[in-house]
Structure formats: structure tokens, C-alpha cells
Length: 376
Image 1 (cartoon, rainbow, N blue to C red):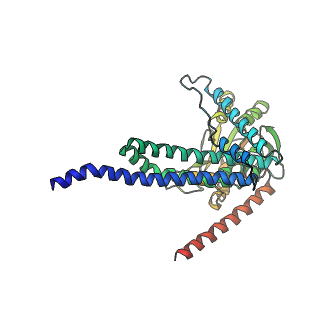
Image 2 (cartoon, one colour):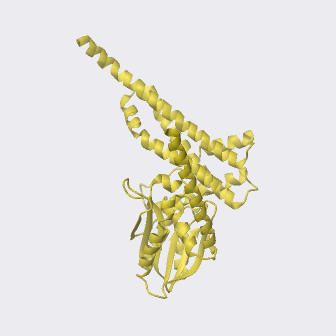
């Protein structure tokens, strides 16, 4: 019996390590395949018969990275970050102009967004592979167990980014576009004028108020510079309230499409654009209202679901409550934050998006019924 326990204590950790390593290796290969598929999808979207130079170019660009600025001394960190973000955008613009020089602006915008998603999938696969090889090299069971416990979340993120890469490259409306979608429904048939990089401004009357409504230019995948656009409007017009509408990550257990109201600027990202709005609002003492539509990270990056779209009436009720806190004749800003992929710039184009979402929902329901029937 003693011999058995001695053998067990010696070999059991090795057996555990071998089994865990086998599972990690399988996941790493699955993620690498996902990365390769996202790369192939992007290449096929550019050219069905790609040259070697195009394949090599995409391979190189998938290794693109951004180094965050030094933040030990916080003074001026926003300026540093803005400089790097602008540099990153310039690199994406240049690369896309090189690989599809004759494409229209909307296709180029979609490809930029697709590349960003594909690079994220590629990075996830590389990081998992790094830790698998580290476990293999060091025989460290603790690292293996920690990684194994994180795998369900890692796989979930990678799968959503993979689906998001395809959606963005195709130019499908995504959950994160709910803010621009709402602005398009408010704009009537006024496409608006581009007052800042990729940001359109329309002027509409809402319950006796002069509303300056802002969204990124669609239907290509764009986010634009909403913060700078808001700053520009505030410096020209006496604004009494700024209202931002955006998608937000829900907690597990919360309902997708639920709406919440708060104070501040509803805007994700590195914080550069949000800082423009916050700074000008503080300077001019302008109240900041925010309205968010809750959804999972997967729903934000993938094709917009009906339950997200159906939140619009509730968002407009929240918007009216915010507007009621101003006076008739006041000037207000309403900014729809988010990726405008697949979403046009006026009400008739929003109605086309509406039809696309309904058709996509029916397609998903058919696929679900087919899978269930096949399983039975």
C-alpha cells in the first residue's frame, strides 16, 4: 500500500500535467485555426485569387501592435495617447489603400474594422500558444491549471471576435451600432454635414428644442472623432445639455437590450474622445446625460440582434426625459456613439437596416430549428 502511494505521488502530477497539456494544445490549435480562418476571410474579401505578396502583406499586418504611452506622470498622457491612436489609424488607412486602392470608401472602412478584429483573434491565439509552450518547457502544473481555468472565457472572447471580424468585413450592422442607429432614426432625411473626421451633424427640432445630432458616417464601419465634433459644436453654439447614447457591457443575469440612464459620457475606447467632451463640459458647465443599451461583449461585436434593436422605443423615452430637463428653445447635443457598420445616415437608410435585422433574425431562427431537428 505504501508503495502504491509513493508511485501515485510521483506519477500523478505528471499524469495531470500531460492531460492538461493535451487539452491546452487542442485549444491552442483551435484558436490558431480560427486566426487563420479570419485571415482567409479577409483575404477572400479583398481578392478571391490572392497573390503571394497580398498574403504576405496580411500576414505582416496581423502582427501590428500599439505600445501604450508612459503614464507614470499622468500630465499630458491624453495627448500622448491621441498621438499614438492617430498614428495607428494612419497605418490602417495606408495599408488598406495599398491592398484595395480602387475600392470605394465604404468597403475600405469595413476592411479596416475587419482587420482590427482579425488582429485581436490572432493576438489571442499567440498568447495562448505562448503559455502552452511555457507549460511544456517548464512542466509547471500551476501555470497549466490557471490557463485551463481561463480557457472557457478565452474561447468565448475569441469566438465573438472571429464572428465580429466576418460581420465587420461584410459591413453588417453590429450591436455596438445602436447609438448611430438611433441618431439615423432622428435625422429624418437630412444626411448631415461632416463637421469633424468621419462625424456627421444634423440639426433637428425635438419638442421645441434645437437638437444637434451626431453620428459616425455610414454605412461603412467607422467610429470617427465624436469628442472633437462635440467640442467644435459647443465652441460655436450655446449648448445647455449633452446627451450620449451608446452600447454597454451587461452583467451576467441582466437582460440584453435593457436600457439604463446615468450621468457622464457614455463612450468606450481609450478615453481620448471622451476627454474632449468632459473638458469642454466642465469649462462651460454643461450637464452630461448618458443612455446605455446593455448587451454582452459578443452581442456588441457581432450582427445586431432584434432584442437590441427593439430597445429603441425605450431609449427614445429616456431621451425625452433628458430633454424635458431643458427649456423650449434650448440647444442640445445628442451623440450616438459606436461603430456605424451597416448603418446609414438618415431615417430611410435606418429602415433598410431594420429590414436587414428582421431577415437576419429569421435566418438564425431557421438555423436553430434545423440544428434542433437534426439533434432529435
